[in-house]
Image (cartoon, rainbow, N blue to C red; front, side):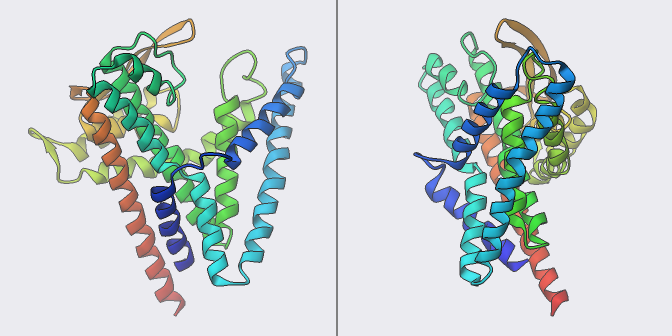
Length: 328
C-alpha cells in the first residue's frame, strides 16, 4: 500500500510539472483505433441487436489486450522497487488530467476577464460538447464550472480510486488503464443518437458502473472540502449534501448528477439552464442554489477540486499507514 501512496504522489507531481503530453498521448492512439473500428463495424444497415453485440465485442477487443499488456509490464517492473514505483506513477500520470483541466478552465476565465466573450466561447467549446456560439458570460461560466466539477470526478478522482483499489492486489496500473479505456469509449460512443445508441450501449453502461462509487466519493469530497465554511448564514457543507439528495436524480447521468449538484451546492452557485446541442435546444435541470455563476466561480471550482484531491491524498496516506501497521 505504501507503493500505491508514493506512486500517487509522484504521478500528481508529474501532472503538476509536465501537464498533458503535447505530442503523442496514448489516449489519442486509443481514440484513433476506436474510431477506425467503429467506422468499419457500426453500419446503420445492421439490426440494432447486431450493433449491440458488436459494441460489446469491440469494447472487450480493445480492453483485454491493452490491460493484459499493462499487467505483464507491471509484473516485470516488480523485479525492482524503484522501477515498479515509476512505472505505476507514469501510468497514473498518463490517465489523470488535473493540470489540463486547470489550463482549459483558466483560459476561459482569462478571456472573460479581458472582455473577450467570443474567445471565451471558443475556449469553453474545448471543454463541453454543447453549442457555445451564442452563450452569455453567465452561460460560459456555468459550462466551465460544470466541466470542472464533472471532469474532476472522471479525470482525477475515478482514476485515483481504481488505481488504489487495483493496488490492493498489485494491479493498480492495470485497473486504472481499464477504467480510462471504458471512460474514453463512452466519451466517443455513449450518445443517444441513432448512430451510437446501440453500438455505444456497452461502453455507456460500463462507464456508469465503473464511475458509480468514485462519483459518490467525489461528491462526499466536495462537501467535505467546505466543512466549516458559510455563505452568509448558510453552511456550505450541509447545503452541498442537501443539493445532492434533492437535485441529483433530475440529471440525466446517474453519476454526473451527484457530483455537479453537490459541487454546485458547495460553491453556492446555480448551474443548469438552457443549452443547445446542435439544432436541439433543451433546458437542463437546475443544480445547486445561491448566486448566479461568474468567472470568479471558475477559480473557486478549481480550488474545490484541488482541496478534494488533498483530502484523497491524505486519506490514501492514512490507509497506507494503517495497512502497514497491520502487516508488521
